[in-house]
Image 1 (cartoon, rainbow, N blue to C red):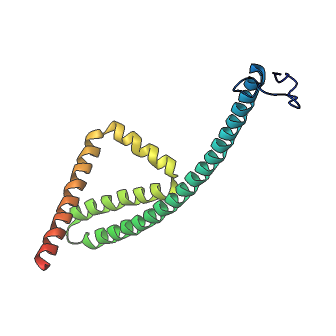
Image 2: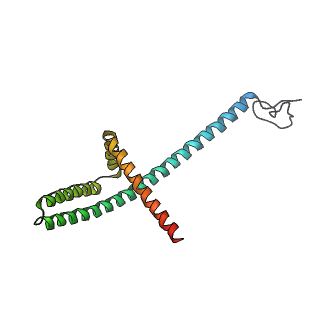
Image 3: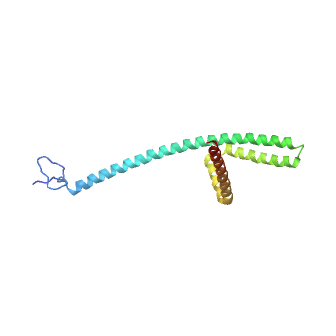
Length: 163
């Protein structure tokens, strides 16, 4: 029986092993080429997937930024209304009017912060606040959970009464 030469010529030869008569060097070279090609394909997929993810993240941030800015504008209208209410209360209760005016100014500051900051800056500000004051974050979370529970429990009770 003849074996395959390292040159790769197979004409008129028969095989003597389960590898088709190929030498270990040729098999190793083929494996290396397949591994290299697979690695290149994986890198291309990562690159394309990463660019798609980056574009999607950018689009999501832009949309979120637009929604936050719109919310900031709405909060600005609320601040104006609060200040108008303070002006109306000035004659009847000057001390209460001062408190309402301060609340309006705080609301106006929040509005301008929301309209003038990026999503990343707002996220960083929220993270910094949560690190400085975790008890406030926990308290607000508990309060929101309680309100949500009451709303859903009330809705379930109303639905049960209607049935």
